[in-house]
Length: 203
Length: 158
Image 1 (cartoon, each protein chain N blue to C red):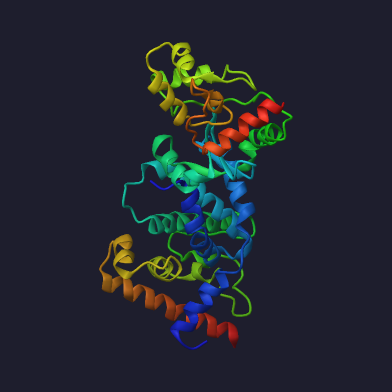
Image 2 (cartoon, each protein chain N blue to C red):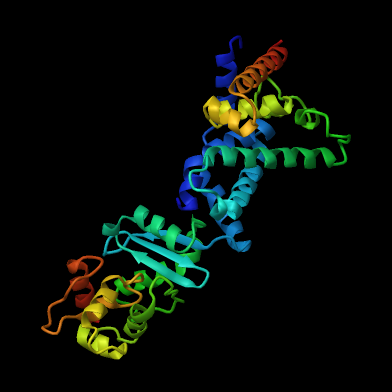
């Protein structure tokens, strides 16, 4: 080894052996959680509605995002709105993923997971709280939702609360439809809303 | 601010290079975890526009040196570390021309300059800012450090 360049290359090569970072990162996430430093844990899962991003705080499921929302953008939003202490940590949200699998397979009618609604405030939050009471297979109009959330005339606001629901599927905004029976907008796209309502009617 | 996961994905290999250069492959994994755990703790307070690679390299260096000192405190080794290069307590010399762990044998300034420049891949202007010295001094320290590593390597080869 004669030149500086060779020494530098030798040094970086010796320290750049192929490394499987997956177990290191998993262990980091576990230790972060144990030390109370993991503010947002997330994983992705495949589903009939496309790849879903599931993110949870220690308080509960805080965000479910569809493919079309761009998961990287959603994580950046969470970094700003909740905390930048975000790590991929399947373990934390595995239970949610399992229940969603069962739901899509028609074997689950209610979700039994803690939900953190911190991303919605005021009236929007009241709307989301109410949505959780609409049973599987049923639908409600935006007008009925506005009334139930305490502001009968805030039909448009009820619509936008549904459209910006941070926890779709688990908080079932897909069960809210227009008074004329048409589906209305949905964060995951109208075809997903249609598929979910069809699934629930079959059950 | 970037989600911390993105920082780990982007800078993980760089931090690993530093940990291995200081500690060798076996102990590097622990130092890697300790580095990112400490970084995660401080991350929300990091000022916008900070040099994230330099910040992580500095933490990795601290964690690596901590681990070398802990190694030296074990029964088989002893002595006052304050004035010695960390490598003086790093146990056996790297064998067969291995550069693993060799970085620890350099004097502090040279070690940091080589680390920031060649392992963290930072330009000399940033190396100088991190070392709080002139760019010329940063260059000199890095090249002296490399020269020393070269001598060390030759000795192993002979």
